[in-house]
Length: 205
Image: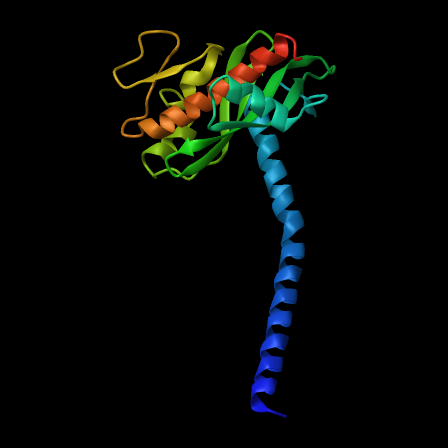
């Protein structure tokens, strides 16, 4: 057999085997990865609605339509990925958990779930995806008193702005030091979530 033909056959066999192996690995890991992502999302829901007994998908939710609502309002860097209703033990609605992705992060996309009660009070957010700078933008996911995220807990939902000079108004959010881009990305993402919440309670059309 011609050496060139033999080499071509060997290379073809290697390519086919490698492709099969990669496909097999993908199939093996696909389910565990999907489960891990679903678990992370459920944990985020529970973080922003600790009193909820369960969560159900919002009837008729459409991510594209929801995103269109917030982008028409000016939040062009944000998408509304999902929306669920938080329920108490009797099945009564407590509020909404709205999952938002901002593409305006310093290190890429930031995805978080935002809890808002039926009365329009923020329960805070829980980040599921973030790749910001360690010690700077990554502080957006820190929790507890005095953190950036704590400013979005027990606040009436409204449109917020970021300040670097110290918040003096209820609508102002103190930026993370040396991480203004991250601060604005998260804050505008929250604003997008609030905008979609207002659309829901105002009567979706």
